Length: 186
Image (cartoon, rainbow, N blue to C red; front, top):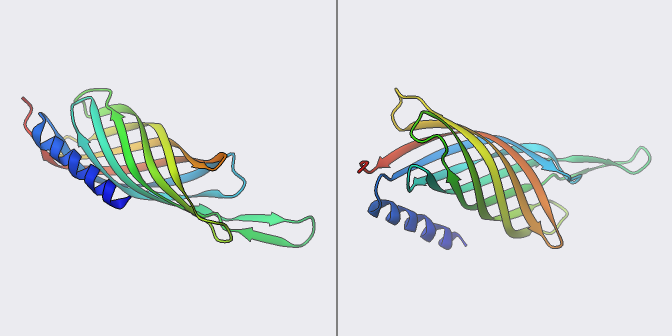
């Protein structure tokens, strides 16, 4: 699966080299991971890296890798006995499609959706590896004096298929991206 991810990332760079007004960047993000309708975990952290390829002013394809450490849960069995259940770790990689609204301004909104391969590890349970889908909304801004550097805040819903049901996680992240390659605008 990693080989496929690398091939897709190289294909995006190849497309970027032949298209007009293309940007390539790299970024990092971190924030909160909040389980939704899930009593197996509590709030934890999420962090990762992104590699956006701006194919046009309105569309960006973005490869990502993320890792979450969800919080442990205390369970009581009707008496003084309690048990601590591991909240679990979630790792994933995939691609997002970002639709840039606001054109070339330094402040813009962007809805996004994506697909990825995720792995949920929790001690005492079998590991789960399956496909996951995400969607959300972000607010981005660039500082004109810092050429190529931009910042964003995102709200994201992540759904990972687990047999007959799914794990749902809400992520709230803040990140920074540096665009290190750009072709001239035609």
